[in-house]
Length: 262
Image (cartoon, rainbow, N blue to C red; front, side):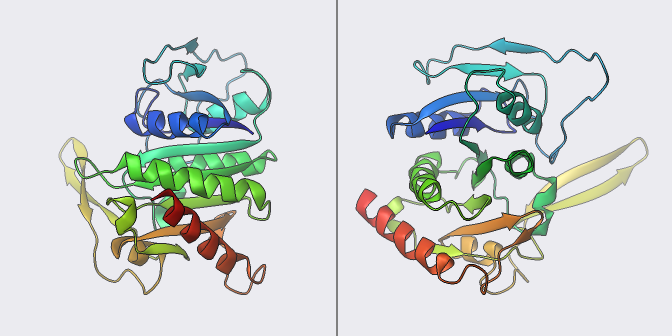
């Protein structure tokens, strides 16, 4: 399967390298097209849409990905998806994978996440996508998230029902993950954002939210050591009564895949 790997942290991001290398090792045809710099928080923005605009683009050689074509673009990941789907970097991909993001993407405010925005853009142009996230440095575990990601993507490829999955992986050894659970979006994400108004600026600071997460939501499950998987349809999640049995099948089959991988 041909897979586009992108992210919002930039082409030099360790998380992007981890999932691209793991997917290539799993036998997939991988191409990387990612922003030249950190463009987190830009949602599904395409950047400039001015007629005649020139968006910088260049090939990149990465020692971590010696056999994978890598391109850097001066634009958000949603634009990278659009450009790749248009055939600018070879054959149109079958699937878009965005991440691995260093920091959880849970709760309804994922609409601001450009990790998630990339896969939502993919669904808008007839592709399917998976967004992958884990925790913030220094506790992030890209190794675990990459192994979970490959298992999820292999399952996703064989079950063409959901258009997009948002996957959050706890920062622990694979053997210590409590399970895989389908989850609705919480009202509150695990990452809180505090804004303070100074005379000449608005200052942003992040903090961890660990209360009022809502039982068995994506935020709650991730905080309890589960892989939280949310099936996205536009900006919502697939309810428990949709596609009867598919949520249970995903949970059981991915749990078995992870157990075998461990």
